[in-house]
Image 1 (cartoon, rainbow, N blue to C red):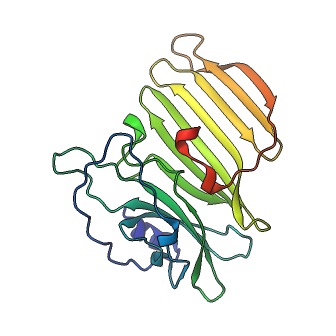
Image 2: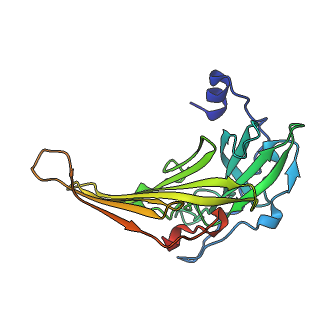
Image 3: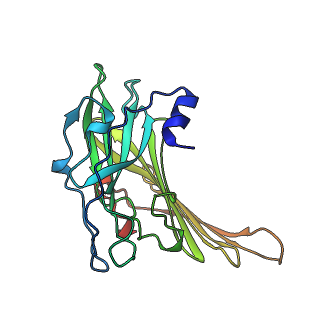
Length: 241
């Protein structure tokens, strides 16, 4: 179901859709090359949530919720490079992505709060579990926390979730937690790691299929303490995990 129709059925205010710019020319990029959104090209403020497209990029999805405790509905935009899915040779284009977080003001306008240029997988960067339209990516606001989840891999799958909370004193979104689950999609079993960056506690569990036909079971649990560290959403890079 189209996102706009779904929003109307749920009774939420849907963004006024602006015409998306036409795709740019087909591009062939060197393997491993990354292109990043320039935060300076994202408007600092605007009358609507659709005002924050940078040249050469388009909005791929919207997520809504209060992120700074003012009871207004803020918005997280997932941007993607405005390129065709395929290049002239018929191969997939590497379409890079970014997150733009905007706060809603009392008068209904918006202001830029953060731009994360390294957090989200590009359209071809997540292996067999990736998706050209970003179906392997979830961006959700719940209880004032921004949760960003991504699937990647093939037989060995990785499901990673980062959790961010707005730090009003710093004026930035701090990384407060991270969950990583790797699993063998063929044989079953794997490893899950949950890290609380506020307390420094990390819990690692390993699972295995002990008997054919059964679900994987936890075979070990380990708790460790990390040295306190402070990272913000702009610092998190999916390639450095």
